Image (cartoon, rainbow, N blue to C red):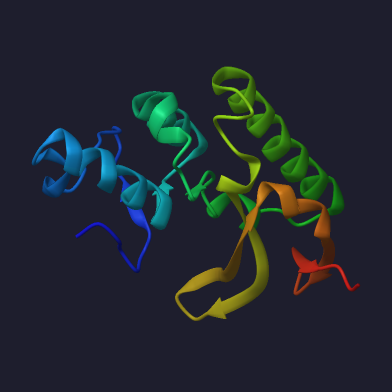
Length: 160
């Protein structure tokens, strides 16, 4: 199947497992490759895994990416103060800039890189806390503002 309705988990260590359809012949591969990478969301488990995934993809496939969830959502859940939020936003911007320098801004589009924002803290009896996440394109990070909620820093969409 070329298009999945759930994010495609990128394994650790990183390997590419493309659909068998892409191996039929060159013409089918050329036509189906843009559908596979352009219609799916890829979810590596960490920023390091994302870097390895992008290296393995190479320029031609990176250009086709619709969305790569570039960071693990666990880290923002631990942020409990304004400094932490500022650090998180700076870290994500720095990583994106590094990747764009390495692969080129025209190759790795900002809107294809998504970062997790904690938008709601959910308390569960068997966990300290869990959360609900919004996956936000790197280009839209400035549209979100931090606020304290239940002892955690969450981000909400800036009111227009």
